[in-house]
Length: 201
Image (tube, rainbow, N blue to C red; front, top):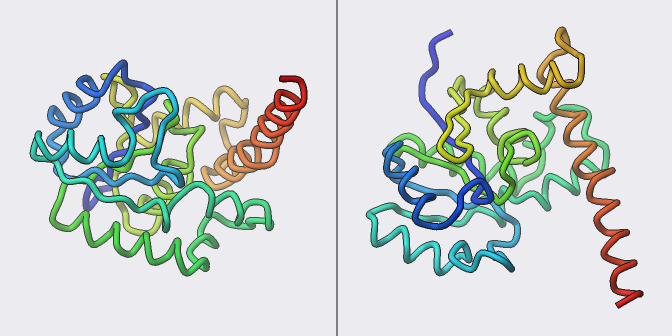
């Protein structure tokens, strides 16, 4: 199947520092970085805070835009908690749909990468929702950057299917299972640990 265009995804946690991050963007000739974090800040990596990142990229001739208010994980989380039957149903959310439309427009004239914090794409909404929908609805090739390595959408899905022993399962099914785990199980555990931590210390 021939793809029309390419959408890149990456998480800054897979890079040792901002210099390595920018080097990879330049190597892949990315001209626009779209930040899809709900909160565009980092406690431990201040270089990736919104304003700092924007300045670093500007010096290298790479444009930065923030779409987290439309395409952030918090919007996805709310939809998953309300009971997401199909990934495509996310487009019923007016904010998410607006963000997807604007992102699509941006990809017409720029080589775009969407960025969040998570290292692995199968642990992040950038791949599981935005990437998946661009592939399914717009026939885009979705390329995932992890450190200095490049993986296609198919590479990532095949890996998860092998790990889950669900080789014949459809992508949609696997993705919904991963979204449910991230937002209903993993996040719940993180909140419980944080609550206990605050009580003890």
